[in-house]
Length: 231
Length: 246
Image (cartoon, rainbow over all chains, first blue to last red; front, side):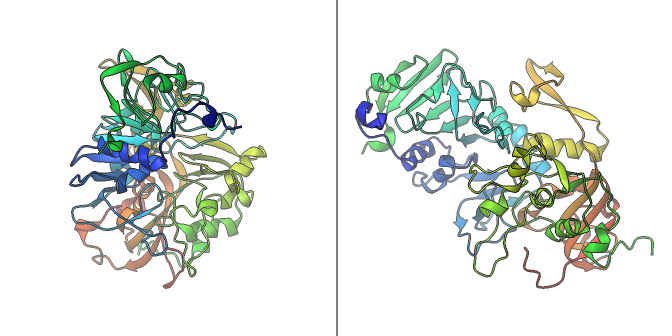
């Protein structure tokens, strides 16, 4: 029996919905690094008129659109292994420069995936302890040093256990780094006073979201339905 | 011609690499920027007990990461070749395994069988360790990794109220780098995102070997466009034209 069917007040949103909502928070003209998975979907879902300069760890800044894998140029790649199209104003550089950008705090926003986020904004997203081996990539540098960190992920694990937890039980990517969590049921801000629920999916009350969230959150005075779901 | 560093074949360029060597593999991971012919030559040469240093290390062969999937494109090669062949016992990298375990990559297979030590380093720390080695800096402080398993056993220090980790420079015996063009002095020019780890690795090894598409006489690379100085490069090998690997 799928516990989602028995407990959910309304359908959870899709991965695309999560990415579309995260894309709303990307600043026009900003330098943005998108992680793999749900975050990578943001690039196709930007609000009209918004233009970003994407940065990828392997040494590219300023791309926006992708080629298909079949005919892409292997020497023009992003860090996800996809092949961006050449656009005017883009730049190539080596990994030293790339991590000057990241570690030096020059990335405006990064959107990362998450396995667990704690009430203090600790992020765990690189290793599942049961597997025993994982990949850090640029994730620790981004999480610790980007000006703003958004985590885009499903609200719970497949067996409906909370992924937003009091304390992360998985090894951390970076402590106290997350600014905002966007899931398939909620938008939650991380503040110095704890978590604040900003938005919930259609049909979900703050109480419904709290039931699958371990830390107790406050509900914002500006609490509203998921902003991308309103017309 | 003391400045002529051109070697006739990939096999000859790696022939003297002894057992127990540490080898830096340039590029990022994926096909562009990977010194694939040098890697295959070292596999065929057979040196054992190697330590491999790379970035995205062993995921292309199972995921096609950074490789084209067209009908005429070659099968992906990655750093897993040295684990499949039993030549490598250790890898230092930022990204050893893909998200999926089906099928299992060669590095994870070797790790599960207890045949491979895998040292997983944040990417910005790894490249700075290599840069530092080439730049004569023995160690440096970075904010990345504080409060994570990466920090275990490492010295920390506060600067301006923030905690930083002490990380050490990382040298290697050999660096394999991949560039578009070399002149006979070893000056290198790259294309697109193929730079990645190669320029820093070229500075951090005792012997740097460059795999290039084209070797030209001095002056064939505009002095404004030299990205890796010939001062760092010991050997250059040109690929055959029409090589199917990117």
